[in-house]
Length: 425
Image 1 (spheres, helix red, strand yellow):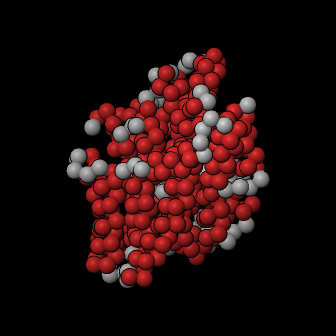
Image 2 (image 1 turned 120 degrees about the vertical axis):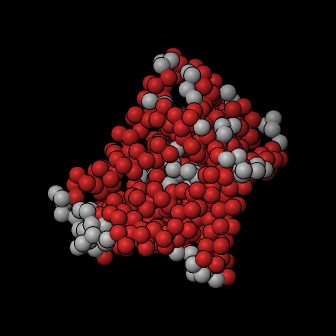
Image 3 (image 1 turned 45 degrees about the vertical axis):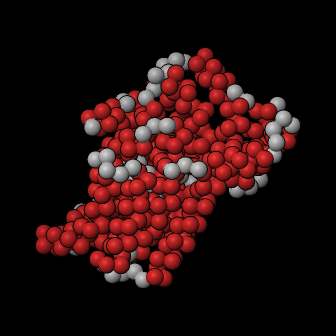
């Protein structure tokens, strides 16, 4: 009965359109009231304890750094640098879109920040050059999924907090999968560019123009070096690196580029606070829900049931990825991580699956969920930015979903793709 209240209550509330955080809270409250042995005060205690975490402080700081970088002109410089190199080839701006997202991912750690900030610049440029608006929106939504894979990464911070895995190791493990995602999408664009007669720049920009664009973008490109170098050199924790990212982005906007004023900083703080509040409310609500799931021994039931099906770690990881993909179609990424990791991680560990490998597979799978209807948050963001009909965007997005799923298969089958950099360092 308790499982029915928790799971059935959550699904019912989500189906009637209730926000994820409140659906988690109300289904948890229903179980506590039905049980009768737990005081209602436990909800307030769990809400507070869930957010009392130093590593979680990295999330608002990374979000704020991304907002400032979007406002200080860093995104435009990165986009221009990528365009001077790739704009001449067929489908050049499609490749630029992906390359710029791979570069920007080292600053934001958020697919939403990429889609809403850099994505607006990319879509405008592609439409100006004559690209179909549906394709421009689709490639932007797909490329933004690289953001939380190539470090830093907000979802990996949350996974690290929940699982106890080293966040620095998770960041390092994301490099190769992120690069594979970007290269796979660029290969697809290269294959269809001539057939669909995608536009391109009239002539090669020239090496002086490339060098000039690199110099303009260089201060922005230093940010990932500061963040990741500080973490892996043992100088800073991920949270301290996030604080350094905020400070550096402020220096860029106020001193180097001189493109920001106090009003821009206030707007960045406001938008960063709003995004942080949304994420943290889901984290806190999902913490209560996950705790109740654990007290009802649901993870043990799931582990026993799935171990009866197979004990092969690769097959188990495919099954877990399939479940996460379905969950990603209906729920928010952060909520899924907070609920699903306590359930599936013990199963993965019992099967001998490395925790870092499991985390990378989980985050990549949930990135695909950002592109899949009916939830598909990135699709709704690029639809608002581009103004293209949702059906047109969805039609152009399906090939990218298939490509990312093809990338996921070797990531599951060959753990070394995620782990060899971690082991090397």
